[in-house]
Length: 233
Image 1 (cartoon, rainbow, N blue to C red):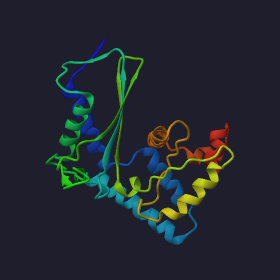
Image 2: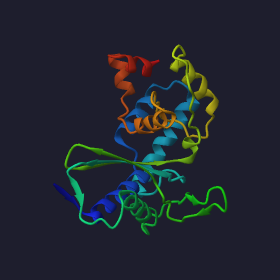
Image 3: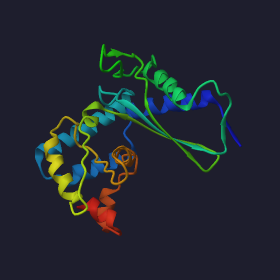
């Protein structure tokens, strides 16, 4: 049985949020550089250059790369051989304490966007909590947490549909993306979830955004299964 200290868990959440506010993931930067190198449009190339410059400035200055520091989404996978050192708080409550610690960090305060009573007074919570927390119990003796700070510009572009078995997923995606405009701050990533109930499909789509970006490698080697064929299409 593994004992997890609640303070360590909270600090890990806070540290992760501070980190992702200032630093792009290596796979994202690698893909951006590749896109910049092969881009033929001057306007698009200039835009990609600005994104890369902004990424470097944010990393060197340890300041948020975007003024929208996001709605916090946490995917928490808890091993069945794990215990916390105390039971005063639920996992969701611990995540929210970590969010508050990160967003109120005096060394690098982040913008709080979450409101309480969203159908009424819409009062800012001033901590960016509560987060959206998904908890799954798995086999093992550890806890795995994937954290995203989902900007409103991209989150509000979320789409859902119900397709007939004979409909084309590719046709639906390629018809929807051009209608989304620039409010999601391109270049963006598409997370696509298929199957299950409506909320399960949306959850799969969100979680898929945590996967490594390997499109340049996939294009180079070619598809090895149906899913990869759809990704290339």
